[in-house]
Image (cartoon, rainbow, N blue to C red; front, side, top):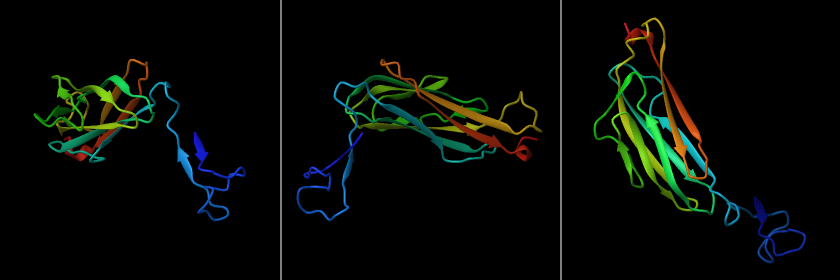
Length: 165
């Protein structure tokens, strides 16, 4: 929702210090008591990977509301064709861990807060896919909250066939 910072009934900006036609809009992040508005975005530092390359993934979770988001869980299984780089998981807020098969973060976000989670994998290829097929590394992160919000974010990387022979 946007409102105008208007001291005049016709909406011409503040009561003083404005020029005709100037307005100042502010984004209001919802009303108190509204459920949190959560987003998840996942990126990688490369678009194409070669066998032996290291890929760094980053996951950003944002709370775009003025309500705290509690009891959140981000889960990101290590994608097929890669192996987790030991000790590479981290986050701007506690607690991110490697479970043996996935990256997992659990925690809370304050109003208008965010957490960034990162980890690395090494590309090993997929032995069940023939080399003549461009292999794709599909990595999916999910966000679960007690409010039932479950956004998902994907990244897709293509492994060039010349490296898979």
